[in-house]
Image (cartoon, rainbow, N blue to C red; front, side):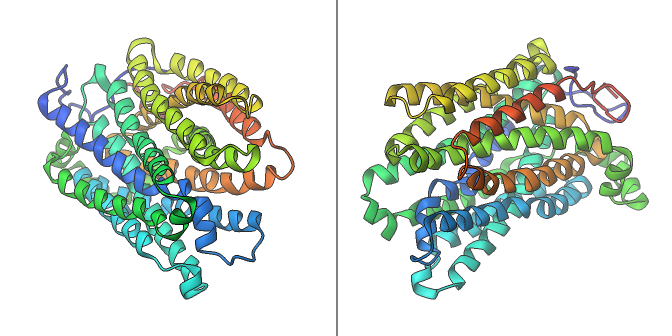
Length: 443
């Protein structure tokens, strides 16, 4: 796969050859905002076991409570395409910055509300329904945030820092998982299980809402991307709007790019949802590992994931995206199999092996690196958002449910699922982006 920069419109001025002070500020604020917003979205899963007892009847079988809790978690993914398409549509027409700020506001408010919701014991069936509504709103917000963040940063950084820029931003986003993991460790360490069930589970959601509102304020210091400014100045956006909606252009002219990005997103969802989000609960339920140890190991894995994203992005600038994908997905296949088959092991082996597989999950940084290149600037936000969010809604949303049912029959279900998707990632690495239907080459 080529390692050229994100294509600009014909005749557009290329970015400066090094990261300017404004570039660094943009990357830093974008990564920080992504960290806080993704924290808001994923903190739910770290307290899934507690939430299942707070928002569903106590006489319900544990596996069914767990299934319904993950079903509400999945609803956040299922609402991503609609929110992503709407936010991306206006991001392509009105500007990246406005929608970039709006998405985090739409995430912060529902997160704060979840922390204040009454439980099933207080209001009955209305409790899980309200929880579901808040997750739907969160999903709509994250659907616009992640593609918007990738496009925003990719259109700012210079060509030879493209992989590093997108990889660093992805590390910032995954840093939200690390922050959630650390908060979960802190809550479970500082409070007794009874206190967590009583009131302490609310703390991370309330903090998340406050974090999100702070990030809304910080994003006011960001500037619109040079690529969008160039498009607007030459009235390309007005012409596109008069002709047809960006989504129509995507569906007619860029179906191959959508399939590629959708396939890679399926691989990304397997790595994130299974290895990072579901595994702490899996370690407790299937292997009887203490919650504190499971969360500590997860924190280590998420830290190595964050470092892996930066390294994978840097390597894409040095040796090419295809080579990094083949090495990274191959490493994910091997290390995930060794990790799940070696459980429960010792505390030391758990932390070490979980950290190693977490590092190779960092290969997910190549997904936006490929995805942003796959669409032209005028419809880039819409194309990436549509393909990414639709795929994540289908595969990311269904993964917790599928694995919950699969685990009833085979405790190694996570190893098989992640391994199979890692193989798919290696196959997709062989797709030539310079073929017809893609715009990876310089305009």
